[in-house]
Image 1: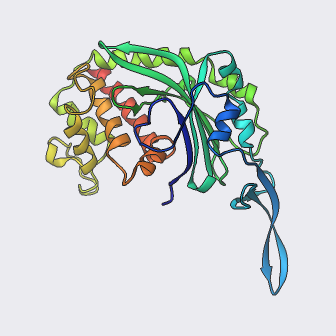
Image 2 (image 1 turned 180 degrees about the vertical axis):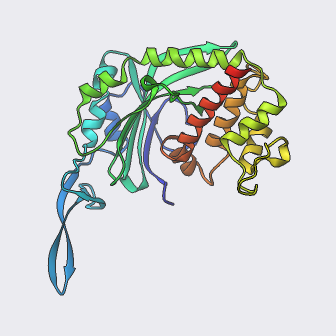
Length: 319
């Protein structure tokens, strides 16, 4: 499987996907690196092709995993890998200060995608006991075309839905760095800003969505905006007005609206509607837990949830 979890370790309760090896709480980043089986380096060697028995340089280099000499990817000379040790070292300041604790780490796609998740020691309750916790996700890809991605990720405890901070504001977007420049951890920290500022922004959005009521018509339109129907004829200008007009995935969201975990929080609101989408993307779509985990953070569903959040805000503002 392309997105199969190669290694994974987690602290605390068993994650929703049921994957990984349990480790003790309060690990340092270096300890989590080792427990997750990520304490290997990426070596750079020239890349060659053979022609008539002669090794001809390609002008590229191969990134090779030190633990088993596996070639992870081929890249240009200007591509600079970030070692796993350096990536995990990003968390040192936060963990030592007590602001975060290491929560999980692992690799996907045969070592091409290495990631670490730290829990920010901050949470809030809305609409009674609907608890949202904050996490910092650091993905360190050893794959051509993929950038380092660092983002704050709220998680809704009642259903383990991974939410999104990526509304249409520059301050809330993920921080991405390509591999053609040296990784500057201090510069990234300045770009990210403080976790509580982003978390406060998300709380404001959630409360706003929870205060605005959906209508039957707007709900149909919303689900179609997030999962557009592909069965309709090209150029069809007639609006989608009925459940039967919706795509398969849009219908899954509609069906989950009142039965998803935590459906009773802010019932009938755009907060409930948004969470029906995140529930479907995180727990229903995909053919395996490994596939859902990858798409939740790095694949198409991460972008889908950005669209769902932005659209929910649009409809709430118009309500």
